[in-house]
Amino acid sequence: MDEAASEIVVLGIPQTASVIHVPALERASKVRVSDVRVQLRKVRGESRWLLVVRTPPAREWLASLDQG
Image 1: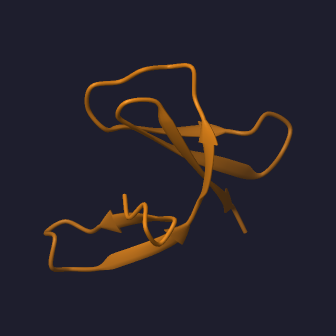
Image 2 (image 1 turned 60 degrees about the vertical axis):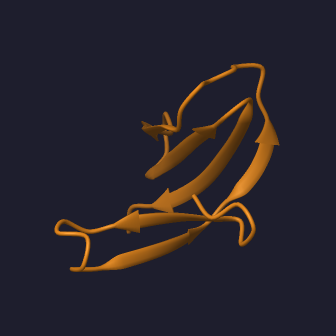
């Protein structure tokens, strides 16, 4: 997570293979975490996915990924 650039940084495997920078929006979260957590969620009824990154103590970053 690059909070200064408002981007989620996705590293390929191995890490030197590729790097993708995905623009993200920050929103307040009521969920407190002690380490970074990442989820990929399907948007019901749409062809989009949400990439959700939670960072300590209670920040949440969202990126919309279109399947198309």
